[in-house]
Length: 122
Image (cartoon, rainbow, N blue to C red; front, side):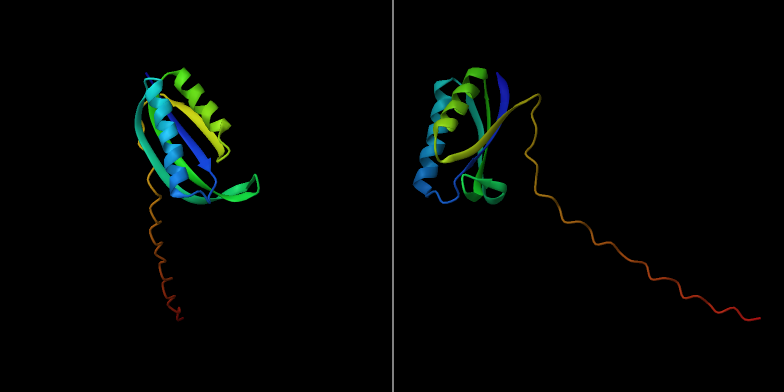
Protein backbone atom coordinates (compact mmCIF):
# COMPACT_ATOMS: atom_id res chain seq x y z
CA UNK A 1 0.00 0.00 0.00
CA UNK A 2 1.13 3.51 -0.76
CA UNK A 3 0.79 6.48 1.55
CA UNK A 4 -1.16 9.51 0.35
CA UNK A 5 -2.25 12.83 1.74
CA UNK A 6 -5.05 14.92 0.31
CA UNK A 7 -5.98 18.47 1.15
CA UNK A 8 -9.35 19.67 -0.01
CA UNK A 9 -11.08 23.02 0.34
CA UNK A 10 -14.84 23.29 0.71
CA UNK A 11 -17.20 26.23 0.73
CA UNK A 12 -16.86 28.18 3.99
CA UNK A 13 -20.61 28.52 4.64
CA UNK A 14 -21.41 24.79 4.81
CA UNK A 15 -23.35 23.53 7.79
CA UNK A 16 -22.15 20.76 10.06
CA UNK A 17 -24.56 18.28 8.42
CA UNK A 18 -23.05 18.93 4.98
CA UNK A 19 -19.52 18.56 6.33
CA UNK A 20 -20.38 15.29 8.06
CA UNK A 21 -21.99 14.00 4.84
CA UNK A 22 -18.88 14.89 2.84
CA UNK A 23 -16.61 13.26 5.42
CA UNK A 24 -18.78 10.14 5.36
CA UNK A 25 -18.53 10.07 1.56
CA UNK A 26 -14.73 10.27 1.74
CA UNK A 27 -14.58 7.49 4.35
CA UNK A 28 -16.93 5.36 2.25
CA UNK A 29 -14.67 5.64 -0.80
CA UNK A 30 -11.65 4.62 1.27
CA UNK A 31 -13.48 1.64 2.76
CA UNK A 32 -14.82 0.43 -0.61
CA UNK A 33 -11.36 0.57 -2.21
CA UNK A 34 -9.77 -1.38 0.68
CA UNK A 35 -7.82 1.63 1.88
CA UNK A 36 -6.94 2.59 5.41
CA UNK A 37 -7.71 6.07 6.71
CA UNK A 38 -5.05 7.33 9.10
CA UNK A 39 -6.21 10.86 9.87
CA UNK A 40 -8.87 13.41 8.89
CA UNK A 41 -8.34 16.91 10.27
CA UNK A 42 -10.43 20.06 9.98
CA UNK A 43 -7.98 22.95 9.59
CA UNK A 44 -10.77 25.53 9.72
CA UNK A 45 -11.71 28.47 7.56
CA UNK A 46 -8.91 30.48 5.96
CA UNK A 47 -8.57 33.29 3.47
CA UNK A 48 -7.82 32.08 -0.05
CA UNK A 49 -4.97 33.54 -2.09
CA UNK A 50 -7.44 34.37 -4.84
CA UNK A 51 -11.23 34.07 -5.16
CA UNK A 52 -12.53 30.66 -6.28
CA UNK A 53 -16.10 30.59 -7.58
CA UNK A 54 -16.68 33.98 -5.88
CA UNK A 55 -15.55 32.69 -2.48
CA UNK A 56 -12.73 34.59 -0.78
CA UNK A 57 -12.51 32.10 2.11
CA UNK A 58 -12.52 28.31 2.25
CA UNK A 59 -12.62 25.57 4.86
CA UNK A 60 -9.57 23.30 4.67
CA UNK A 61 -9.47 19.55 5.41
CA UNK A 62 -6.40 17.31 5.63
CA UNK A 63 -6.74 13.58 4.85
CA UNK A 64 -3.97 11.01 5.34
CA UNK A 65 -4.68 7.51 4.02
CA UNK A 66 -3.04 4.35 2.71
CA UNK A 67 -4.18 2.65 -0.49
CA UNK A 68 -3.44 2.24 -4.15
CA UNK A 69 -3.80 4.51 -7.16
CA UNK A 70 -7.39 3.39 -7.86
CA UNK A 71 -8.44 4.67 -4.44
CA UNK A 72 -6.99 8.12 -5.15
CA UNK A 73 -8.48 8.19 -8.65
CA UNK A 74 -11.95 7.41 -7.26
CA UNK A 75 -11.56 9.86 -4.37
CA UNK A 76 -10.52 12.67 -6.71
CA UNK A 77 -13.38 11.81 -9.08
CA UNK A 78 -15.88 12.09 -6.24
CA UNK A 79 -14.38 15.36 -5.00
CA UNK A 80 -14.43 16.78 -8.54
CA UNK A 81 -18.14 15.96 -8.93
CA UNK A 82 -19.15 17.52 -5.60
CA UNK A 83 -20.15 21.19 -6.00
CA UNK A 84 -19.28 21.92 -2.36
CA UNK A 85 -15.58 21.18 -2.95
CA UNK A 86 -13.66 24.15 -4.34
CA UNK A 87 -10.20 22.58 -4.77
CA UNK A 88 -8.31 19.41 -3.86
CA UNK A 89 -4.82 18.01 -4.23
CA UNK A 90 -3.43 14.55 -3.51
CA UNK A 91 0.24 13.77 -3.00
CA UNK A 92 1.99 10.41 -2.69
CA UNK A 93 4.29 10.26 0.33
CA UNK A 94 7.61 8.43 0.16
CA UNK A 95 7.88 7.96 3.91
CA UNK A 96 5.78 8.63 6.98
CA UNK A 97 5.86 12.30 7.92
CA UNK A 98 4.45 14.18 10.85
CA UNK A 99 1.95 16.92 10.10
CA UNK A 100 3.72 20.26 10.51
CA UNK A 101 2.98 21.95 13.81
CA UNK A 102 2.11 25.59 14.07
CA UNK A 103 5.14 27.82 13.82
CA UNK A 104 6.58 28.77 17.19
CA UNK A 105 6.80 32.48 17.89
CA UNK A 106 10.20 33.94 17.22
CA UNK A 107 12.30 34.63 20.31
CA UNK A 108 12.55 38.25 21.19
CA UNK A 109 15.75 39.68 19.86
CA UNK A 110 17.65 41.33 22.62
CA UNK A 111 19.19 44.62 21.73
CA UNK A 112 22.48 45.32 23.36
CA UNK A 113 22.76 48.87 24.61
CA UNK A 114 25.68 50.66 22.99
CA UNK A 115 28.52 51.11 25.40
CA UNK A 116 28.87 54.62 26.68
CA UNK A 117 31.81 56.19 24.96
CA UNK A 118 34.24 57.52 27.52
CA UNK A 119 35.47 60.97 26.60
CA UNK A 120 39.18 61.03 25.96
CA UNK A 121 41.06 63.63 27.89
CA UNK A 122 44.38 65.00 26.75
